[in-house]
Length: 353
Image 1: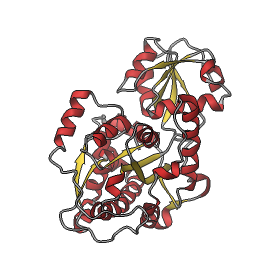
Image 2: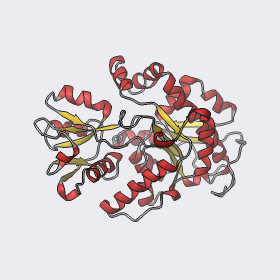
Image 3: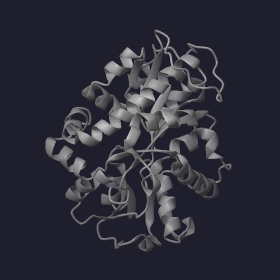
Image 4: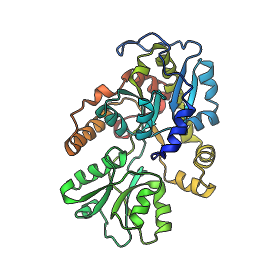
């Protein structure tokens, strides 16, 4: 799944206004977090979801009919990623959003109560990384060990920031061994910073690397050698505590599972309906992205994903001065068997999960 950067403030305001007419008021009785998920979706139940990639897939695959048949109405919002989704949550303009795993941590640390209701992975994550480390022209970095003494672009509240800390940890380095340059990742901000040599190293989405190197031919990149494939859907806690919305979300999680598996098998169609039609890539660039994008895996259990998330939470708490978190409190595992059940025999297990 692709990762998205921050929206400019004016555009984000427009997006929020676009869903402002969708009521955030509770539509159903309060559902305890330990209660079974309801099966029946009351008529008129609506979910406000920021999940642009899956939205395109659902519509292309005809899975929107399955949602309609189940009585689920989705008010789609062009929002994904941590900063935008947390802002929308706080404005009560969104129920759920697609993100990596870091936003749920920062939501907790900044007072927004959320629950992860969906987990997916990349089947071969080291072969198909989400990010690489871009290296500025003329800078000699051939492995993570060479990061010592370098200026590295860093955004504490984004997945890229956590990635930097994890890479340093694996290389046996600390923040004191490098200079972290606070810089939010927006559009091509990191590539531009590399090209201007404002920083020596910056995390770049894998599909950005080719664009970066075409603009700055002397620029290079290296693989991180660590997993960065976490992909989730998280929701306001009050959404999963609303009996009607929880029932609708149960249906959506099943459909979302089918959508990702459809994407694995229909890569050319996905390239057209999302990468070209939504992201605006050329056919050639969309083909390149497909070639470096791994297949989505639906884990049989969330155990491995939660172990990785706990390790990341512990690292961020230590390095950024946050309170310790028990990540088990950030997930709603009632949706775990819903997801696995929808995937059936296609679930992934063991190291792949």
